[in-house]
Length: 79
Image (cartoon, rainbow, N blue to C red; front, top):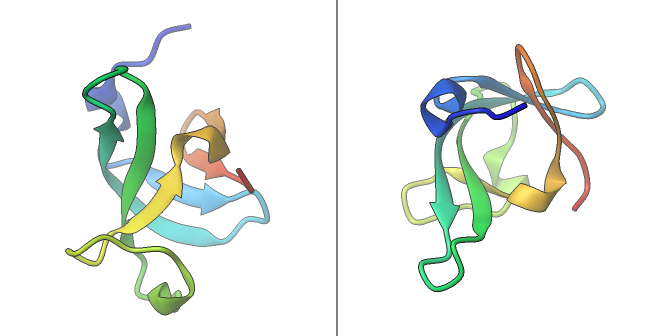
């Protein structure tokens, strides 16, 4: 099954332990290889974003390899 990037943007992102992490805002891609690199997630106000890797805008960075499931929500685990 194929999923379009536009369909992912705005989806809720949860950990595989059920914690709501935030909302997907974008995905980074390696220009040379075309490989999907990171999810950029606008953090939930209920988490301490300092505990996660962030970009210069404050978005949480999760390696694309950490994606476990994409349905109504995006579930991520350890990469």
